[in-house]
Length: 317
Length: 242
Image (tube, rainbow over all chains, first blue to last red; front, side):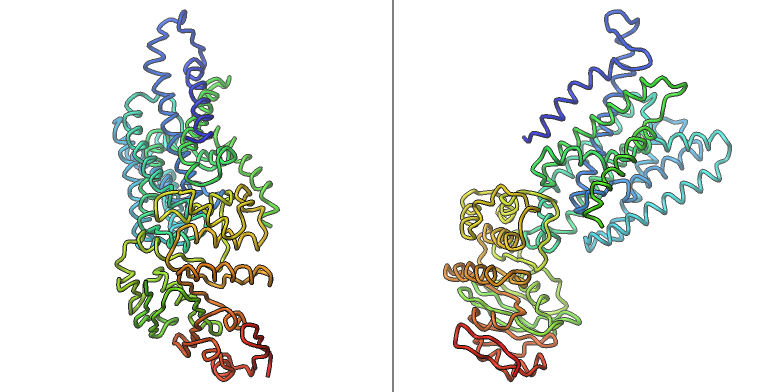
């Protein structure tokens, strides 16, 4: 058990009760009318969903950075999140979103499609460069098709639905979304965790990792499946929530011995914490309409990324 | 535990290589740029998918050996000193234990000790000098207690003191029965420190034997197209233009 796991588990245990009470209406369980109903049916599922989605994104980011040996890697770059988004947008485009299960189902099919495409192109060789390029192409193809769906939306309502949905949020989510996402994210994090020893070996480069017994194709499959499950399930229930996978490993790394394997579980906890706190903040902000969580995290994430680049500038130049 | 190459073919790089290596000796692979030295080393380490031929370890085809079993027996050290994350020296050296599925302190400490880097164990990778990094990466190989050490240009980028030190460590491993195969550009090091030299030229073996024979001025003229002569005495030879 490393220090980072304890720190972020502790912070999460503190943040969860606070987040349940926080909102446009602050709840006092003793005096607020229907307090337990609000907590049990609205705030708790939303908080649990924030934890589930954040954990998946955090673990995926840590695994991705370890795999690409690059601290600027983000799971969103590799086509699976855009693929899932395209699936969800397709459901919205055809008006299937009225059925509660169809939108997440379409998003998962989209994530699976992107995953299959990635595996088809890069899976056999297990090469990292090919995987990265394939991921970028899948991402831009899915992005282009999503833009096409927006521009050809049958009516203004569908268009605004799509655009709003793309800026992820956890508003009005229920236990149903939790039941969809939680098992998939758990399985995904477990797969990424299984890849962790191989990620450590990659620290010394691909040839050394292979000489230590790492099988590149098996590792790539673990990663593709793990990221499809964690990120795909997250997008399916919450829309696009960017930057979590990028930021979180940087927050966690200084608390670990910097081996990629030591990042995965604490990054899951820190991702859960970040999304939980951010979602509580957007609820509390005194705005006319609630700020979308995806927008809030991008507002936080983009300056962080810039700060990171500035810090690394000397090394990159 | 013999390491044998049988008819290795890799398009554009290896054109039918046969050799049989015995442990307990330093074998140097030499040759001009593009001769296929690194490819041969990678093939011997079981890291290439070949177009033809097999590499056998004690009569077992490496291609059919489970990767972890292969990794336990063959330690590979590439030329590039890539360390992606700023982990501690001890954690890097422990990576050598990965094929065994443990992080046993015994072999890790022994490897740190063998390369005189016990004092560096808690230092971070990015704070190391080039010479220290080279020793740490060799310690990583030793920690896995392989039967064979296959190293690509382990002396490149090291000053003469560190070169001699690394060669001394490798010789100590050979004395314990380990097989050592080195790709070397520096023919004088091959001449002075190898027990056997394999000269590659255009993907084929041009010479294979004791260093004095394999690296004769005539052979060097034929493969490298330069006129040179050896000066000095056995064990301390230098190569100069003829």
